[in-house]
Length: 529
Image (tube, rainbow, N blue to C red):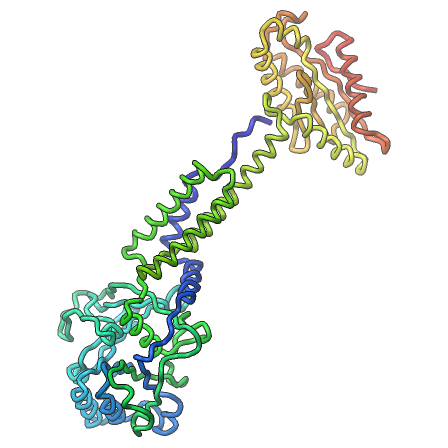
């Protein structure tokens, strides 16, 4: 057993893990993002109203799709609205051209209707599904509804601009919120077949069960309800009936397993109007670099000040990071994924702490000079091994080794040289250990002991002989010894312990054998009767 250096996690481990985790999709960070968003959720605004294609409308107007004259009629009733979002993809002509023309005329009369485009998968690639040219020309603008799924199948993000070849379409919700769109048109050339996105944002969370003010589509047609109250408000027309399939999994509403697309658009429009839509860190390399910087700062703090109270310091540092994330979200609408970093910091700190505690425990059981077990460790192991031998009725061997004429060596060569000799002899003693059940220890100034569970008298004597032979090969000069070199005397005990045997009684037997070896001329091994 040699001296142990403190075991700690290598300094590069934590930064490497942080970089790896920050570059990979991480559900822990998604969970943290959801909880933080719910903590800062906003209430639905009365300035945004949903005209719902709901079960009531389907019951009175018939199965979907309806004749487009009905859509035209509803749009005509919304002439006083600030903006109207027709949350329906009008990519196909109806069976009746006159019906389509009626909708075109209504779009022109209103003059404030925005239409959506959507990305759809074709041949494993995203392509643009746009409204028919006749509708696009009559509407005030076209915006893209780009809501990609995260790795867990939930919608949490959107983009303020996206499109095929280049981010040529503004977000549908950005148009409704009144943000200035980029100058794009249906005739803008497609540069390539790659889907491009810009200005990523996180979807807002809605507080409580109270949603946006809503009117049934059929009530708008029949002029039921207070339609005049819609003046100056943003109105979205979209499906909420369960049979129409416009429902998406998203953590926006904690009380709802799924959210209608029109509600997602309404919440995003509201957040854009209030400039509270949160953006994650920009370029792909920024989050890893920032998280790496926070990690290195933690390692610097730990190394300089807080090593002794590392777990408490890690908890405080993690709490500070959480508080910083909340402030960053509230004040700058900027989201920093910290859940994985905090988890890694805590795990690494706890692991490092217990590695050190294990090291300190080993130090408490180790002889500082030789690195062998000390007397306290030896006594504890002796008691345990003796009890096991008594239960199993197996032999237990003990070797006590004493360096011959060691006081003379110290007096002649000095104590520093004596310490060097003890280290060399400890190396020889340690080599006599056969397996992890054996124990080599320094039990006194120049005294060593070896505990050998299961060793027979013959095996114990063989080990003693080998030990003496190895010490002879070292040829350590000792001018004050009759043999001219460092040697040792060994007392050997091996027996099946009886019920009344104790550690002291067995040790005394081995010590008597050691005394006999010294009495008979030293540099020898004697076995106890």
